[in-house]
Structures are given as C-alpha cells and as structure tokens.
Amino acid sequence: MLETLKTDVLVVGSGPAGSTAARYAARKGAQVTFIERRAQVGVPVRCGEMIPSTEEIGGMFVNAENIEELFDIPHNLRLREIQGIRLVNPKGKMVNLPFTGYTLDRDNLDQHLASEAEKEGASLIRNCQFKSIRNGIAVTSKGDIEYKVIIGADGPGSRVSKALHLPKVEHPYPAVTAQAKGDFEPYVVMYFGGIAPGAYSWIIPKQGQANVGVGFSPKFASGTLSEYFASFVKKHDFEIMNKLEGKFVPSEGPISNTVNGNGMVVGDAAGHVISVNGGGVPLALIAGRICGTIAGDNIINGRSLEDYQTEWRRIMLKPLKTAAFNKKLADVFAFGSDWRTGVCMGILGQRRMGNLIRCKRLFP
Ligand SMILES: Cc1cc2nc3c(=O)[nH]c(=O)nc-3n(C[C@H](O)[C@H](O)[C@H](O)COP(=O)(O)OP(=O)(O)OC[C@H]3O[C@@H](n4cnc5c(N)ncnc54)[C@H](O)[C@@H]3O)c2cc1C
Image 1 (cartoon, rainbow, N blue to C red):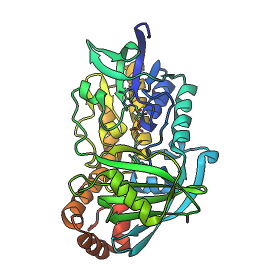
Image 2 (image 1 turned 180 degrees about the horizontal axis):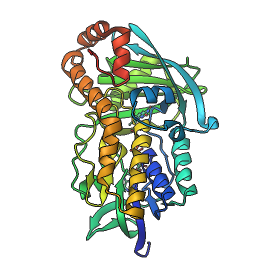
Image 3 (image 1 turned 120 degrees about the horizontal axis):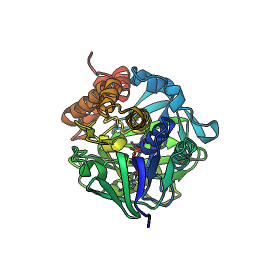
Image 4 (image 1 turned 90 degrees about the vertical axis):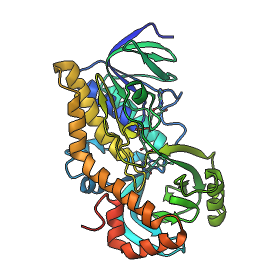
C-alpha cells in the first residue's frame, strides 16, 4: 500500500491516451503519476493492431498540427506496411481501396508510449486500480492519491468518468481478436455483415501471422461473439495461435462533455473512436497530447481545463460526428440483412466506401 501519495496530475490508465497525456503533462513541468490496473502495460492485447499512415490521419483530421511528432513510432515496432483495404460484402464481392498504414504488436506500442512518458518524468504505478473519488482524493487498490488534476484514460467503461459525473459511453460494441498463423497479403480485409452482424470481421496482416477478429452490434446479433468468431475461424480455416481476447469499442462518437471541475476524460473513455471502423489509437494520441498539455498548463500557469474540450473538438469533432452519422445510416439502411448490406455496398461503390472509412460525408 502507498502512504497517501501526492501528485499534481493523476492519469488513470496506461493505454495510448493515458501514456500520451502523462507524457505531455510531465513535459510541461507538472508532477505526474499514471496508474495502471494491469501488471504489464499493454498485456493482453485487445486490438486489431493497425495504424493508418500519418498521411491518412492528417487527411482525416485536417486541423491536427504536428502529428508527425505524435506518430514517430520507432521503425523496429512496425511489422508490416499496409497497401490497401479490401471491403468484402456478404456474398464475397470485393471493393479495393488504396489506403496506407502499418501493423504492429500493440503491447510493444503501449510499452513504448509508457516509457516515453517516464522519460519526461512521469511515474508509472502498475497493479494499481482506480476505484472512486472520495472527498477529492482518488481511492485506489494501492491506497489514496491526492491530486490537483485527474485524467480518466481508463477505457469505455471509465470509472473516472462515472466518479466525475460525466456522460457514459453508450452502446459500445463487443469485439474479439486473436492471432492466426500463416502468410497473408499486405491488405487489411474487412468482411461486412454475415458473421459480424452490424459490423465487420477482419484480417490484418503482420509478419508470418495476422490479427483476426470479429465485432458486432448487439442489436443485430443472435449468437455470442465467440460463436461468431468460431464461424469466422472455420470459414477461413485459420490456425489460431493464442487465447481469444475481447473488449468493448465505443460506437456512437464522442460523449457530450469531457471536463468537470478538475477532471477530464480522454480516448475510449471519451468516445474518441471512429464509429464506422472502431479505430481509436490515433485519436487517443491526438486527444491525449491536448489533454496532457492543458493539464500541465493548468498546474504551471492556471490555464482552464475547458480549453481541452474546445481544442479536441476543433480538431476531431466534425470528422467523428460525420463517422457517427454514417454509422447510423448504415444501421438503418445497410445492416439487418446480408442482402441489404450487399446492395448498399454496391450503391456506395469504391469512392464512397473510401469516404466512409475516412470519416468523410457520403453524399457531399
Ligand atoms: C478488438 C479490438 C480491435 C481494435 N482494433 C483497432 C485497430 O486496429 N486500430 C485502432 O486504431 N484501434 C483499434 N481498436 C480501438 C483501440 O484499441 C482503442 O480505441 C484504444 O485502445 C483506446 O486507447 P485508450 O488509451 O483510450 O484505452 P485503452 O487502450 O483501453 O487503455 C485503457 C487502460 O486503462 C486501464 N484501466 C482501465 N480501468 C482502470 C482502472 N480502474 N484503474 C487503472 N487502470 C485502468 C486498462 O487496463 C488499460 O490499460 C480496437 C479495439 C478492439 C476492442
């Protein structure tokens, strides 16, 4: 147990959002502690492990400045360059989209980001679970922590968000992932409908293996996620190498308020995820930097935490709202039957499916 620990900024969670927030708050000169309930940062992996290229991210979030610094991921962490995305309808018809990105081992990425925060002076405490806030003090499994600013980067079921009386991430989708052995082409393959009702199943190539997984919308599903995953494995005859891991993915865009008093939420805890494809790592980094920088400024020169909300909205709100709107359109018109999914994908065609993936309007 800790004696009551005192820190300027307490960050809960050492995923991409938490480590990035910790890194930038510490860079500003604040004393930063970030806590992680798991024993090992990033383990187990619950992610498709695909990151779009800086060019793709910059094209989606045109107001984001200096993203090169954020996505300066060491080359030895990058496993495979992606040359495109194949979107497959329930009948097997394929649309090829030019798209650049790369895959990595997500545990290595998370550990790299946590070590970047530590290099700036932030202190990481593992095996430390945030429980609640009592009289302005964080109660954790390792004792109480006194803070001036608290940042919830603890995922879609955020306890910090609840303790701060911020809105919940509503209707997150369950998704599962595992590694399949073999040589796969350098394309991300997304299979819509079929065994992933209301969402998609995927193959994301790595080195000598691929990350394979399934997500679904509970409102369209009649089986369990492990049943759908088993069908996916059977259909493609995958040789699965590890235990199936799952998590929830925010599906409705950002929550309406991310700041209350001396607390903020960021990343999945704030719904910072692209609704149409479930991608959240780039947003966790972009919003994490804003959140950490403003927390640090708050400590050093009293800057208002409300600036965090203004700033992430300036950069991310429009594309995220467009993606959430497109997802709603898909729920109404495309999902519900494989036939409708196939027809809608045919009507949209390659150009508009590209807009869908890139958070752009379908019908400008
Ligand atoms: C199956 C699946 C596949 C995905 N594929 C991709 C993909 O290919 N590309 C992409 O960009 N995005 C993908 N995503 C989304 C992406 O993983 C998330 O958006 C991203 O991890 C969000 O980062 P975060 O830091 O906000 O949250 P997380 O990565 O979830 O980190 C939260 C951290 O907080 C810790 N924590 C939680 N509660 C507490 C507590 N009470 N006390 C202390 N610590 C706590 C957790 O252990 C965790 O380490 C996928 C998601 C899933 C589920």
